[in-house]
Length: 284
Image (tube, rainbow, N blue to C red; front, side, top):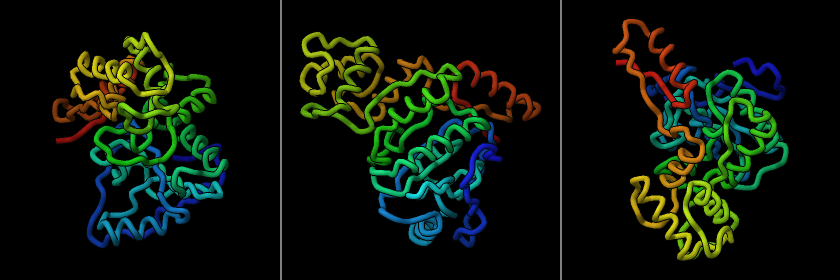
């Protein structure tokens, strides 16, 4: 990474606490298919303090985040993007983690720098805008992180980049919703259900999660072989995103051992990515 058009990036990768005997695995640049946004859930802090906590408290090999954005907008480069560090349970391979210092409320300069960083990263890694996700948007995550609606961030990124790459922004809620909830995020869910072909004939998009919305969620879950519980959570949002973007949100693997040369696997992976699949390569 050269960060050709960015300033105020502080490379602290060699200055942070690391575990004396443990090391993270690595992945290739070609494997990178996700960028995940986190918050620190603290009012202060930086890469050094987070590294100390991750190593000394969690016993991790090093800091879990690849980048940390401070309250003043300074970006700290904490891990090489080829490091498979721990920041999203079960989804760390090919995933770049960016942490905003704060707890749901961030400075305007932080948000501006976040967009700058993602745009710069996308010049070198094959991550479509619909794969820029909040921590809570990944399946099987019990968290409200990063504490804001990342769908709006994706919409802003698409606007800035002029929709390059054919990405379609899908606005989905950032938290689990169920009968009795009332918010603008319920409206996002209702609109997504309608766009996916479900019917809300009586109340439409009214921001109220009642019996009609629950019925639409259940119908969607049944049609797409999900657990039919009427609760809109990460797996329902994942499938909605797949349906509305007509792109799979699943990661597929190319086994290098099936080919004579790794170059052949890399070529196939690129061809599949170009058709909308998210691919990473593993070795035997």
